[in-house]
Every structure is written in C-alpha cells, then in structure tokens.
Length: 319
Length: 241
Image (cartoon, rainbow over all chains, first blue to last red; front, side):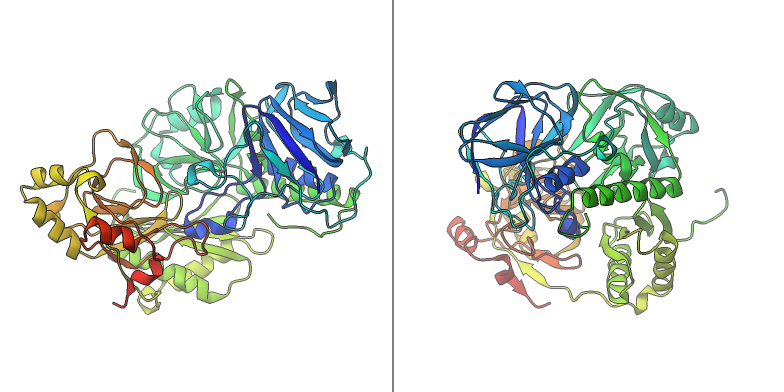
C-alpha cells in the first residue's frame, strides 16, 4: 500500500474507473474515465486490473507527494508531467520514493491525464464502481490536504522504467474529424442542416465538462421543433437543442432527454472527445455503421496487443 | 411519406451496439405498456449477446455485444416478440404509498396550484393523496421515476423558468406528468409536497425499488409522520395492488 498527500488538486481531480455501464437499467449515467483507453493502459502499466480506479486530472495543477514508496504511471493528455520539478516520461512506470512530488505543470496536448498506482486507488465502491459522479453525490472531487492511498497490488509488481511503445499509445490527434453515426432524429434536420453539421467547424465551448461538450458554430437548420418525447440518450449522443448548436453527451450525461439527436459519436472516437478542451476546433464526419464496427474491432485488438506486450496476468476485461 | 401510414414499432440500429424500438409517439400508458412488455419478452428470450433492454415513454433501447451478435439478429428477435405483445407478460405492478407532507416549505407551489385550478388547497391535497400515478420508466439521472396520470382538474403548466434547486423527495406536477425528485435538482415542475422516504439510495442495490409499471400514491401526513417514514426503506411502503 502506498499513501499520498494531495498538495494541490489542480483544476479538477476525481477517482475514475470503468464506470457504471451495467446500472443503465436504473438510469445511472455511464460514469467512469472520459478517456477509457488511457485509463486501461495506465492500469496495465502498473500491473493492475484495467478496472482499477485511477486519478483523472483535468488541465493542470495536480500535485501529489508520496508518503511511501510507490509505483505509478501516467497516461492520456500531456499535462506537463514533472517528478520533483523535472520533466518525467508518460506511459512509463515511475518508482516514487518517500517525499517525491509529482506535478502536472500545465496543459500541452489534450485535457485529461490518468495517474494509476500499483494496487489501484482505494476509493469507496458505490453501485459497483469507484468512479466519482459529482451530480449524483457519489464521491467528491479531491481537495488540498486529502490523504489518499492505494490498495494492495495482487499481481506481481512491474519493473520501474517499463513503458508502452508508441504503437500502443492512442494518437491524440485532436484535429482529425470526429466520426459519427446518424442519430435517431437525423430527419428532424433539413438537408441543409445536415450539411451544416458535417461541413462546418465547431468550437468546444467553455461550458463543457464530464457531462458533455457544448459547441459554438453555425446553427443547424431543422425541419421541425427541437423537442421529442423524452427518449434514451446513448453514450456519445449529439443532441441539438433550440439554438441549433450540437452538444456531445459524455460519461456523466443524463440517460434520457427530450432534444432531437442528430448523431452519435462512433465508439472509437469517444476517448478522443474526452480529451477536447474549450477552444478546440472540431469537425464531424458521418460514417457507416460497418466502418464504425471495424474501427472498434481494431481498437479492441490494439488494446489486446498492449495487454499482451505488458504481460497482463488477468485476461481481457470487457468494458 | 404522404398517404402512407407509419407501421409501428419502428425498429432500427442505433450506434454500434444498440437497437432503438419506437412505438406510437404519444405519452400514453397503453403505449408504454407495449414497451414494457417488449422489455420483459426480450429478458425472457435468453438471446446470446443481449445485454439490456430499457424502456422509456414509448421506446425501448436494446443494447447488445456487437462481437457476439448483430443488429439484424436483435431486430429479428424484436420483430418476433412484437408481433403479439398482448401475449407477453409484464412484471407485476406494485403500489407504493409514500407518506407526504404538503405545503409550506415542503410544497412551495401548493398555493399557486390551488389558485390556477380554482380549488381550495385542501382539495388539491385530497386529490393528490388519492390518485395513483403510474411509473412510465426510470430516466434522467439517479433512477428518476417518470410518473404520469395527473387528472385534468389539477393540471398546471411548467414554470417559465425552472427553480434552481428543489430538494430530493419533492413531489411535483406539470401537465399530466409528475415526479418525486430522486436527488436535489433544478426543476420546472410545481412542487406540492415532499416525502422523506428515500426513492434513490446509492448505497443499496438496486438503488431504487421503483420499476416501470408500478404505481405511486402520495398520502398526506404531518411533518413528524413524514420524517418518521423517512427512516424506513422504500420497500416497506409497497402494498399489493
């Protein structure tokens, strides 16, 4: 077990794991890591099950001090990782000594980093998950002075210094179009409106969080009113309320709602959307379901290869 | 689509791993019953790769593992079950009678509802105490039960601007719809009273005892009785129908 003192929580730091997808039946948001692949890789690096809880930290500022020896790994966004004031490598197992300070100096690329510790973080399990869900009162954001700790590592401890080769690191290409499948109410929008959606540049609005990304850009013309009879909102739904601006609904989003949905983010691009920051510019690209499935299959395959390369003891864990 | 009538249910793939089934576009308990019967039928069918079937007002989302089965297989199963939904069973409905304190700080809109409907506050309370509101589905966040069946005499439009924060357990109405807030939330409904029985408890499994198809009644009690009721689990307020 390792203990840490939180010197600074930064912009927002919460425990996140794979979330509560099985609780959809009880109308719970999915919850969990906004960039799930990065969470899984951080856990694999330190020898954890992929479902272990890590710290998801946003934008900048998180600073933790090790109170014991610890093995950690950081994946996801490049937030200027430092160890004792010097730049430290991501996607690499780092051995911390007592008193070592890990700090995220500031955003370089992407928005959310994952800090995993060997054993996983010891956060309360609520409805099958350690993921903090603020709006539902499940857990709380970490704050200055918090003492946090890991659980006992059940697998063999990994070698300090081992790292993921570039092949397995998700490409954080934030410029590439967000691939989408048609939404259930795509015909609520005129042909012109659908073209606006796929041909325009949208800017991520500052009013974006774990619930979803709001956007700014050209308004999407509709063929009828924005309201529908309250209906399911699958993960990654892109809804268009009365102002005509798409909102991408993410891990902490409500599971039902009454706005027309023009599209759904392809699963393979959900992690990337979880890395978008206010001010980032995006495009949407409609693809076919067969293509989305093929892309998803490749992503699952790549993760399986990473698992093998890291000699993960526990077999494939389904998300 | 001119001249053609739409044939329900409309069944189509949604995303990589779900199928959306839509019945007639109405908020109506009989149409909602079709959705619930389809869910029950799918759950009984033991389909490989089927993960979950979840009802809303008039639709069902069917989630599956796309590496085990395909959207077309799920669609075929939905079609088969939908051919005769009257033959499908549904979960037995239960009645929840949740002791509720009306008016004052717990029901800030009671007077407004009386004003708008032309009823005395006592009459509003009497009506609310006796009506049974069906649970259409669980949605939004935190197992929020969507209730309906509010009689016309006490129907009232939504507030023009929602209240920023209404405490969990508050009982509100708008049009034919009603809710008992699962957690503290902003809301545009008119809140008449509050139950302290926890309708959402994240430390329990399942986090709510409400199931789509159940019925809810909010009998008036005084504040002490309402608070005392809040010490019990919501299952203790189930009565057979």
